[in-house]
Length: 547
Image (cartoon, rainbow, N blue to C red; front, side, top):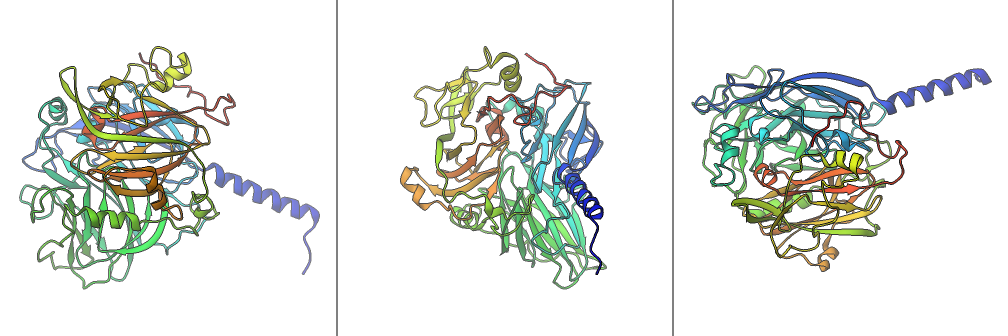
């Protein structure tokens, strides 16, 4: 066989380099969104809750992307109040300017528009977006995000026949503005559970129900997200097993499940094979920590429809675990582990990056769920500090004023509960390129969940009662799953490790919307003094100002 000439080798090498660079940079995706109130959409006949739509859609449109793609979203605010959008779980590498929360961005005022520009840098997986201001998430405005593998990196399971996005969450009887106005006094709990914005199958007040059509013998990927405000839920499909394969950008060890707990703000991928007799089957999501009542409005019900089936779902809804059984939920949580051998956003195995021999540089012990009466109103706190949102975005203040006059860095405790309840702009330093341990404590009566923007953290431990340093010996440091939202059980604790290699101003919050809105959040400032824009992006050219 003839050998290639020197020139031909150089040509092929150059072509290969161009090919690899193009994959590293990703494609540009341009989107235009009009965010508006729609009073005509009624998932439930008797509910007059106005719905926040995007381009007339509820839920909003899918962002279907690939690792390293660049997303441009021109958001037009057609609401009557300010708007911000966040991209739950997208890490915004070196670019907290695009995170879409009050500490990073000035809001888009009514009648105006602003373009978010961010990269799906070194990520894969299932996520969602939602509005972060004025309790608006309770009215919708959310939608799915997929970050697909680059074609040069294998997915650790056969390609499914199709993929379905399944956004499930609780829904209020009242307008989100009315609920917002009642938060400091008597909070009305949600009364419905919706599945992709639709009411439960079989309920006479439901205007439409969700249904997915499958072919016998084929396998499908369901990307399930809890987009609700309040409740964790248990998910199951009548007579069908689920194979867990991914959560929030991490491929998991593949385990077969009958049911799956999904907590507020979390996302999972499961594979479901249509291996039953051709018929229709119930898809069910029921809230945790709520008394289970069959066909209640609190249970989301959809349909798995086998093509050509004429047999409707029948029999009782598939039974899930006792909604108050915390032990089984913790057992399942501990079984969700990282697949160490597969590649994900990068070709090298996920397990290349692990916590088996790390040295901690910081520890935060954060108590959530402690309420305080401040200024005549009830607030939620972190270590007895209720977050006070300043008029100027923290990131903007950092850039223009070095934070002066807007917040005091490291002014509040992260190792104990303050003896005096206060309101304050809670910002703590995170050591750049250091390992941070966070232990979350839950003083609520219900399951809480916490989210750290800008990072995936390693979920190393769950426990009951008081945490002490001796519990570190019980941590899973071999294959803890990496995610961005983690549940904390009532009167319990959850421990995570995060490697702070992403400079910026990052929100650390309860995903329960009432807790968050009433002050259960803080910001972690990860600072790299090097002004090189390769270390952290400068402000965008279209930077909004406020305060």
